[in-house]
Length: 410
Image (cartoon, rainbow, N blue to C red):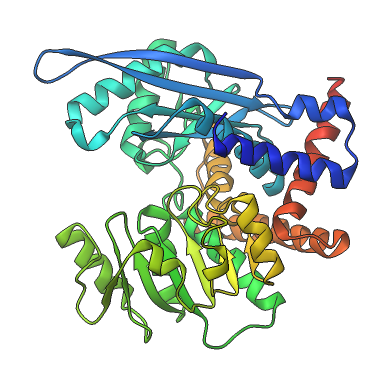
């Protein structure tokens, strides 16, 4: 068992102890309902055949169809996917949308693939798992190193298999084939709504400085939204390195620089820093928006931010969370902070099923309402139970899931 799934189960056990959840219910929650591992043979451009390994973990569907992203990454493994599927189960319950949790992945470095190889890999994966997914079974979405184009291939291949158009089988599609307006920025937009809500509760208004680790879709869009709302984004980083200017960065120019050079480093008027240095900068808000477990027991004491907004999945280990709580650092957990993506995925799914599509203003207004309602509830549970925000979010989620299990007679 990997550290990630151990982390997930440790948080589950900790929460269940607070709630006095019965043993049988805990046992159900500790294991995924279905684990799927497939081999995907792909004909490479050079004519040789290469076999890739793919996964889909369907964790719990007591509250609705499974829902979860699909990631392509060299480090993808079964334990990681299990942890991510568990977190998706919690996230959907916290966001109060009628989904269970799942996750998928393929162990691959897509930088080594041509576009044709990537398409054949995606279609091969769909053929391998087609019987396990569907609009009322399990609905994938983009995740690390997957995008709307990959979702389009997924939908097209699944539709071919079923003999009819099936747009609701995935979310995060291009708008032209049934995607929702606002989906591409939903994770960042939702995270920003949560941050503004928290700052209001804390009565913090002035001199809000932000550092963002991870300048992919979520991190870049969050930086852009914060910059447009006059927050001082002082540091950002990508997979290679980072940049820092205590007076603030012009985020639009940083994006132009990254698009032209492939990285944020060597941006004029900023100092190059490492990803590790970025985490330890004297910021009001730290936004980890990259991969898991970047804040650990080894660097938690060096975190100087007052607020950690987890835009990535699982960026803070349990031991680190406990240290930050002792330091009075407010950690806004991933299962709340980055739930904007799955909330708007739910909106997209609803639009697909009804064949009626919303204007951007309606999408954002409903996202604002849904995620702020969840934030307010997590905040109230945090105060009522005298715990951190992560524990509060888990208490809410487990309450809902256990209630659904009991009502269904599981």
